Image 1 (spheres, helix red, strand yellow):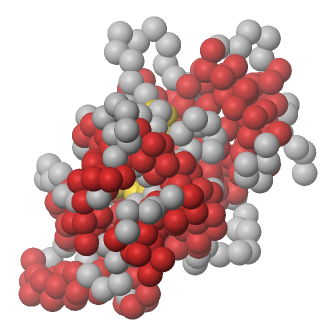
Image 2 (tube, helix red, strand yellow):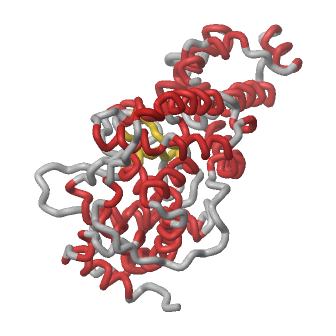
Length: 403
């Protein structure tokens, strides 16, 4: 959609309201009509699922405006400054008031509401790497299932049969799992064939198939919720705080004071952002991040194109209330998680490693071992053997509310 706008087509041929159209014709676009003009353009962009433009993209839209309507060009400089700023401010407004709607669209609406008791998984440590015994005789049905899946996913979300999609994904699971575990297939090729794996619901269902437990993701979310407030208190009580902890605590205070979102979600985002850094392996020659928050003027796509392992890429002034947040892998955006709660984001990020059989980044193994052992409940996990992880959890537990 952005590329369509950047070719100017929408700006050049957009049909405005009668009052704005008259003002454009008579070259008297000022005051409230100017605001309405910008509002109409930005609302139309956002209606197609685009809620953020970086500075380059804002300038390109501004260029389209003054190209079509030269009399709107600023009298000084490049002539684009006031339009770029107006577009930037309008998108901040759009993101603020569209948040609830997007949350409903993107959230995992089928998550069971009844809490399931935590379990300990005593299966062998690599049970998720078991290659299914897929029979080639089923390939004729496989092609039919994949074709029907493509047909269903090509429809608008409101017209998709989610029950049928889930069934088709289950019917093709063994073939898909075998292909992922035995061949070096790029993530983009998997997604091209199985689009549901780029949705929060599809990721949850697939992970549950892999670990053979329908409550697995729910348990991860519940355990994360149990620990998140403890993580906040742990960071506040640290005698010697690293700079990233100080910065996130400052962002926490700002978000809480301004009531940007609920305290519950702020704490979830804080824990999500700080845990990978708290558990990062020290003294590594290479430095990689599991979470990267950019400024609005950074080239988001350029950073995304450089990703390899699954990570979080965000944009915004306050990392706990990002304007945009996405799970990225192998140079592409896998899933937009901007308006999903922190517990859903961390579970999706974790599940993606299992679904696509991607090794944990060496520098961040302790973070994933923590999830393995203390959120997912793997008794065989390395998290129970790592002194660094056990020491962290021992310190953390003292801040956990006792039942």
